[in-house]
Image (cartoon, rainbow over all chains, first blue to last red):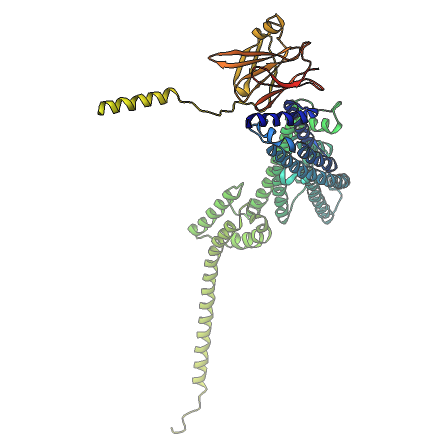
Length: 428
Length: 151
């Protein structure tokens, strides 16, 4: 009886709901379609305004299907209704963060593009000035003081050029620098486009080549080398950092080029073409830059060691030929040992060369880590000083002995004169 | 006496084994499975691990064993464990029960004289609900129409 009553009630309920006939399958499909569509839209949204509108659609989806939650929990197995909505909300939050970051970066990029334009203009001005300075340097009828002034200005110009160039590079990478590894291939492709547009690789090559030209055209003074070595080391270090990043962006551009064209793209945008140009020309240019930097270092250090060696040979001191820090150390130690063993007068070496020339003029460059280093220079200086001390001590002894002899003679003379002039004894 | 007790216990154990039965099993699918039959008349419901040929049903419904190739099939399992199968142009809902490597006809319920247009199956335990557009609504048991209008 009860069962019949329940059945009748059920039928009544179903009949009452009959006008709202709805297929479970359609409900599931409708939910799935809207869920997938929202996922796709949220994932591809590019502005926060667009995302704000989508947030409302996520909320609407959650509310609209809330009545079917129990059914959807079963139909979406192993997912659940709440799980799907939560997944949408999480995707929304990620997209929002990403879009906000990109929008901030876009603003920053626009600012930096203006700065880039200014930097590029400065570089061009410096290039023109540098060309004039090189021409001045090659003019024969100039006084020595005037030539030194030109060399100084040219060197300052080259250093300013270096700094400006790497500021330009830093500006290009700055918006992505912290997360270059996490930057998307599209962002890296944009960087490649900007690098190509600013003609960065050619500029780096030109700066290195100008430094080589400068070394070839200039007679440097010992004190010039310290700053030139620093300049080279900084340039090489920045180039290494830059080339690593550039490999990354070139590889990303290569992946994009190899992949399918992006949706919505018809003709290739100019920036994309520039990125592709960079990707195709970069390997050769990088090799050229490496080669010029190698030449730069070779010329600089050859000039340096030859100039230093001339200080010894110019004073008639025979020293073993040296080409780098270790061989210089070995030569100096060999020279010190030679003086000790032979008993020859080390004065020209110790005082005229080491103290007057090496320590005063070359020490600044020699103490650079990439040349000899402070510790090794101090060790050599001590070895040479010890050689000099023996000379000093011997002289001192001779001086003291001489003074003692003179003092004794004076005392003897005075004591004799005193005896001669003494009055006769009154008691006699 | 001991022998009698042992025989009694053995008989009880055997009887228990032979009548091992789990009651109130719910076989119901939350939502119907919808798919087009392949050109070789096969329907495969991966989610439910079910695969069968609809050639026999096509022959019974349309007198042509290949009539359902490429056509939509709708399938729902009721709480009791019976499979309800129908589709567009069907005049019947076919009810099957499971057997060893077989679906065995439980009943064939006539639901339309002209053929269904766009049917839907819902699980409304203990019934299976059949919808087909505006106003068409039937509650089916494994053997008959329990309730519903038929315009």
